[in-house]
Image 1: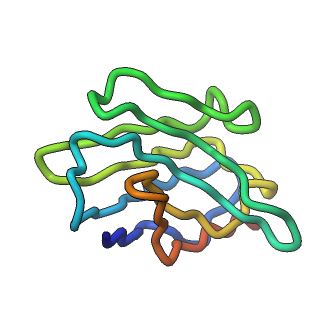
Image 2 (image 1 turned 60 degrees about the vertical axis):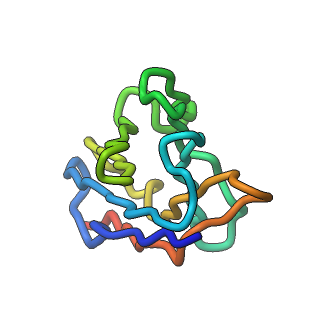
Length: 114
């Protein structure tokens, strides 16, 4: 299983970012994919998940209305579109799958600061 996140960076409050996660090594189009995040000094938080068919999604309360998860099964890629970013969104964002016990990538840092 390989999950490679990209798209993080430094953005001002109110800004936007699009995270991508390229997946390989497992049947991507058959599994739920998720984005998790971990802020400094805090635990891991489930941000969003998307069903294998891309139609059913879960969005966490803290980001609902601002974040959107989507996937491209042909490209084995999952995305997290983030708008109206806030300082409290600053975290290391991970792409994850529950395939065979679960795996996540190395993460991409998102920093929201003026």
